Amino acid sequence: MGTAVVVGVDGSPASVAALQHGHRLAAAMDVEVHAVACWLAPQMAQGHAVMGISHFEEKARLTLNDAVVAAFGNPPPPNLRTRLVNGDARQVLLSAGKDAGMLVVGRRGHGGFGGLLLGSVSSACVAHAECPVLVVHAARAAL
Image (cartoon, rainbow, N blue to C red; front, side, top):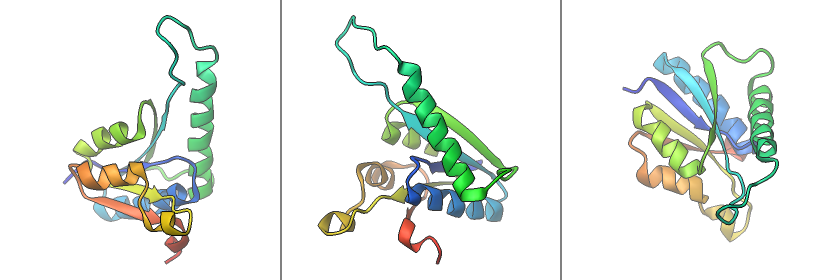
């Protein structure tokens, strides 16, 4: 059994619901919840500096904090740890899932045919994670 429930957070209603589900699972498993948000700086040609990279990191930090407040209010649960990582969400979450008891991600369905499909991050997690994966649908979060 892993040492934590890892939850991918992108600020969407589905990721807020994933945080809530992840917290309930972590309580049942008697482990911590690790809320993980990722950010990527824009790719520039080699040798050219990107101005304002800290802006992207700060925006991701605010998104993570806002999602935690939306999920739990203030103060957050004592077993919650947040982590902000510079990297591709698929790679970061798959890496975090290696030692996790479970990986929880939200599904950002947009209706129509696209709403029937998982997104690229949730699909990658389901296909490649080394731990169980729960995909949470925001519309069903209240169930």
